[in-house]
Length: 276
Image 1: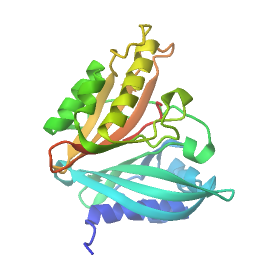
Image 2 (image 1 turned 90 degrees about the vertical axis):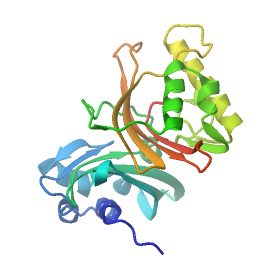
Image 3 (image 1 turned 135 degrees about the vertical axis):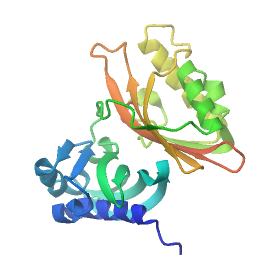
Image 4 (image 1 turned 60 degrees about the vertical axis):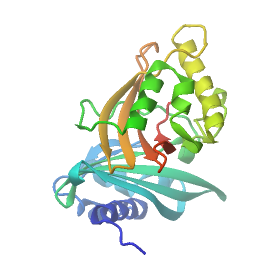
C-alpha cells in the first residue's frame, strides 16, 4: 500500500480533528493562526476557530460512522492541496453520505489557510447558498486542454460541447440528492456521456429562464475562476457562480475536481457547490 503524501496526511489529521472536536490537534497543523472557512460556521480564525472545531456541523448534527479518503490533488509546487473525503453519517438511525473537500494552502510543511466545501443539506436537510469565499484570484494555472474546452462550453451554454469533453462512460457527480434539477435539491450523479448531456440541457434551460429568456438553454453559466491547480491528471478549481439576474446579485461559491483519463477526456467531474 502506498504511503500518502505528507500533505495528504495533514489533511487526514485535519478531518480527524474536526470529527473528534479537538481544537488543539487541529491548531497544531497550522504554521500561524488557525484559519478555516466552513459552510456552517463561515471563516473562523483562532478564537472563533475553537467553537467551529468543537461544534463542527457534520459531527454534531449527525454521527460520523466512517471516513474514507477518496482523492488528493497536490499542485502549484506543493502550495495547494485539494483532498476529497467521503463521510458516512448516521442521522437518527438513517445512513447517508457526505462528501467533503478540504482545499488547503500550505506554508512549507504546515497549513496556512483551509477552505471546506460540502453540501449542508446532507447534514441538516435544508438547501443553502454558499456565499462568496474568495475575493481575488489565488493561483491561476492554464487548464488542461479538455478542461479548457469544458469551461468554454459551460460559459457558452453549449450542452453538446460540454458533454463531448467527457469520455463515453464518464461520470458527473454534483453531490446533490436528485437527478432532476427541477426538484431543487442539488445535482446528483450522472453516468455516461448521453446522461450527462441531458442534464446539461436541463441546467442551461434553467439558467436561460432565470436570465429572462426563452429557456432554450443557450444562456451559459457566469463563472468567476479564483484558484486553479493541477497534478497533471486532476484539476481543482475554486469558483463563484455569479447570478446577475437575481434580485440580490446572488453568488454561489464552490469547488470542482476534473479528472482526466488516459484517452484525454474527462473521466469524472466532481462538483461541490450548493447552487442546484
